[in-house]
Image: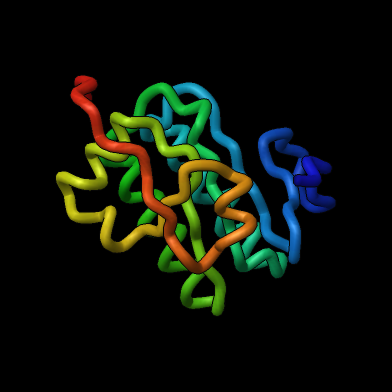
Length: 134
């Protein structure tokens, strides 16, 4: 994956992947404020022609309802522009939250960024949910 920054942004956690896919990699807590930034950046990418987005969640340590709302909003925005949203490396707590809310049937999830970039339209089997607390 090419991790160069995209020309219209100075955020170091946004890079470009193959076929013009934009890869966003938020880190730490994906709370209300961080979710708003993620959503704004993702919608900005779509507006600049990067309609196919991958959100690498491997470095996210916390997520809540605001995170889910942001992801659904990003997905809707990408779809309206003829693009897509794919989640990669989703932490177990968020996988469980997606499952409990039924969003795991709406959002495409891949176990790694590599898989998400290689098979963007086809979800791959995610690891088992396990028993980690949310």
